[in-house]
Length: 185
Image (cartoon, rainbow, N blue to C red):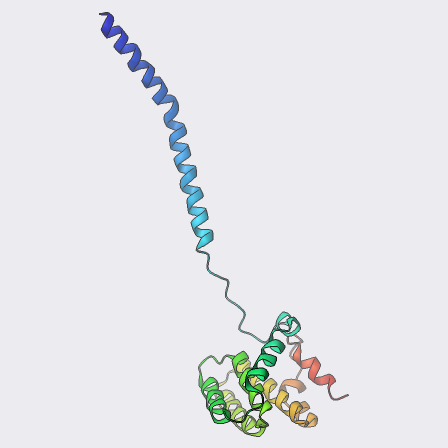
């Protein structure tokens, strides 16, 4: 009898401990699981998509485009060896369904360095007419701005000011428009 009493006491002792500790173990497991889920989501977080609209103020004033142009000038150095390749690349970029205007601007800068802005203007005018026929207002606006930049670079400021993107006032969300209008002074 004594053995059975000791056995029952030890069983009760372990049962009490098990009943007391079990909820803490379960809650601890849930907390660890939720914490792991939060940390793994933070590690695998996808970057937010960047705006694909006109150049933002931060991009214009941050100096990234100017720095890229300096790097291009250093690499390119005004050499006329890649002119045909640049014109082909410009035509390919403009033929895309969703053109990458920053890349187009870099190619245009290389063509400006080699004094081939007339050929670039012909390609841009063709793409501009195509975009107008397809009814893509954002693409038309961006191409007109690039064309105005080429006119200004070439020294034909009056022709640049006649571009529709500078004549029409569609809001000042683009920092380039007021800048190009001031150039006439």
